[in-house]
Length: 197
Length: 197
Image (tube, rainbow over all chains, first blue to last red; front, top):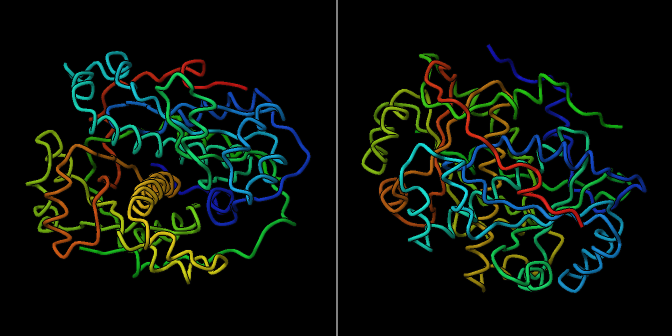
């Protein structure tokens, strides 16, 4: 029988976790990025379709390529973070379905022949995987600063010039500097967000 | 300094967690659903916009209303699960921004005046919140069976006849029956899904 995680773990994942705008000068290693992927990859997607692709920007040079696409308010956050990840999706994710989901004959064609279904499925499931990345990073003791204030088309033109991949959102990764935090925003309460039937 | 969670917690959240098709005959209480929301609500959304709305179907009568929208393969899963949740979003989520995100003057109008941006923002962020629900349920010792094989328009007509809310995906909640599991699907490896720059 599974039990709830302990209070400290629930705090680290949800209750005390924050979106950090400022970052300590402490690196994130490639081994940590690999461990992050090896954890988040287990998160569920529809028909195990795994459309997300992750581009980790680790150097000043790589992050400079992102700058023209950023809102001004996000420039300093990206420069200070040890790593910024582009969460994207592969438009042709369904080419992997014969391996990832061999149970359903014609799974690939279900999407290859229906561009609207493929796009919705890619966006929904890559977003889920982006959330798994956020939660996996927190589970591994990292802080995260997700951002959607940027020009997706500019990111795609710079990082995916051949097409095929499309950016969804960005996230800074590292060790947050708590002195940069604003007071936490309120949340909708249970009765505002939930209906019990 | 935050540390990684222990191995058992990482297993429970990611590595041994599975999408359950079969369910034990063991209830989930309203108190558990409230605890679930009180945890997932802390997950980050863009401008704290929190567009997700959750409809928890706890009774056979409530779940029967869902059945005409389900793929045949999902009928038994929903009937056996103690609770099925409809993850939806509020098209007019931005009406709450003056409370949820008071920092930016005109935040409400940014979305109220741009239907395409509002729709993309609602879909992306409600999906993130759906993933937080999955991870929060696992953190609380529950199993989850997310499903996107259903007719969204039928769900919306039945549960949101006045419009305003739109369904995104479904998830069964409860205590999974491991005898119902298929072998786990493979995952794309690091080199297939990740680029390091």
